Length: 139
Image 1 (tube, rainbow, N blue to C red):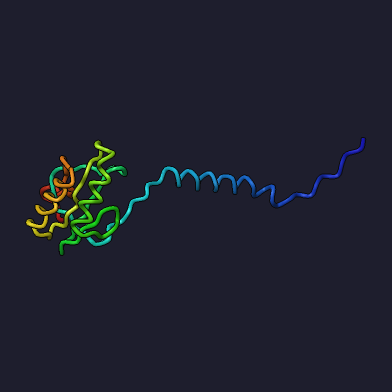
Image 2: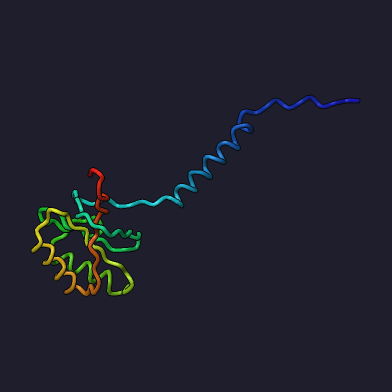
């Protein structure tokens, strides 16, 4: 009986399954991961007993402690913000709109921004807060 000589082992054949697994994990984390945009300036939202979560499709307007305004990660003045929000909500009426204001921002500035958003066509606005620490805990 005549047997064939065994083929020499190829290192590439042994590493291919590992490469396949790594690429599958990479694709999984790219699809399952959620990227969030960062604010163009630091904001420390006020604390609240209620808690809600912002969806990726929601609109977030940021108001800084010194009165800076940002929308979609870009710094804007009041007129530009009004126009940008009006353009964005004219086609989609089901969007939830959040105002992420710094806890140290001036209340009159906050009211001014709310009135500006109302003039842009926003009829429902939610103020974004962070959960307050529970009673008896440090924080």
